[in-house]
Image (tube, rainbow, N blue to C red):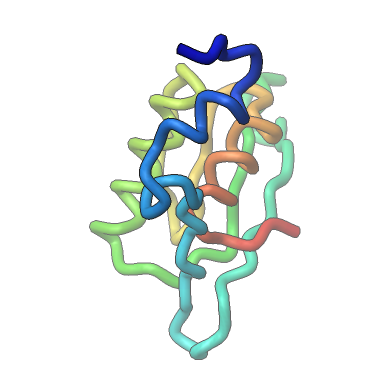
Length: 108
């Protein structure tokens, strides 16, 4: 048997149908265009505590709650949904951005 020295060698063992990585389907908003989200850091009205704010969602409330739960699990932090924005406790701009890109959103 051939010695596997890299991930490319390991990928050759998979059937051709499973070798392609799935690209996320773009999330379409109410306007018919792909949703563009803004991620910002905020400390106002929070006693100096930092919160990552993600705004620009055009989703129904149940989908927004599901996205918030996913982000809270990935970031290992608490958070809430307020007025079509998601607030995650702490500075999680990078983790939240990576997770949202995998879900098919554009980040600004």
